[in-house]
Length: 350
Image (cartoon, rainbow, N blue to C red):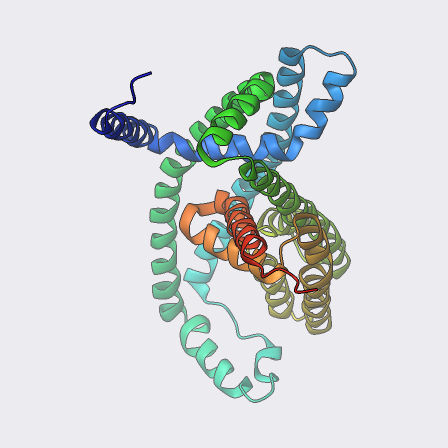
């Protein structure tokens, strides 16, 4: 057999690289939807396998799981959207009232240690005075209108991404085994058998991150929601939803229970505000230092510090989907590192 000339091999490689680059460029705006579909498919794949073992056809299992995930994603978002719309009306009315008459300084502001006098003076000058309050709240309201106008266009884009995610998820559920088999063949040919182990590490990292972020986040929202309800804060259900949703984002939980605590302080409920803040810090400490490291680190065999770096780096680089892609990339790098250490380890002299 005549060996292939070098120029043909180089030309073929260049053609493949150019074709892949052109395809990625063409699908660039659709990549977030595909990435979300892959993450959801990996996280819920055991459910798909269980349905197949029960005798369900692949396309029926794919349709059922896609419909269930669509409901699980859309129903909370719809409820949250309705609540936000209702609260927006209340906030708009409150803004108009504050613009007309100002916001009186609460008694507890002056009683704050160290900064009470300064805080009360600032409040009196900027919030209690009707003219200053009108200027301040008017500026905030105008910025809010601009923000919500932009948010409408962003929301339409997110809905389109969600639809493409669900469509891609259906085909992954239906044709996943064939895609996995074909991908393993190509990976074995290009990189050798060790790449299968790296792939398993990626799958474990994604599933562990979903469990550590999403499920623990929902648990944090439920526990802190009980605290919100017990404290008597208004709109406790809305804050519970917000806590559960933002729990996957670093510092999201701290932001919500801090807002709740400040609202309670503004209403004069100093003890309740302090207790909510302390309880929120305790829940956050237990979740971040014990529960999440146990779920993510032990399952994916990744030190929690690297998981945390992957979460922050992935969030900054890829957006929200980076919460799951970041730890997956860290697992790939760690697997390559461990393979290199194993292959270069000096033999035992004994």
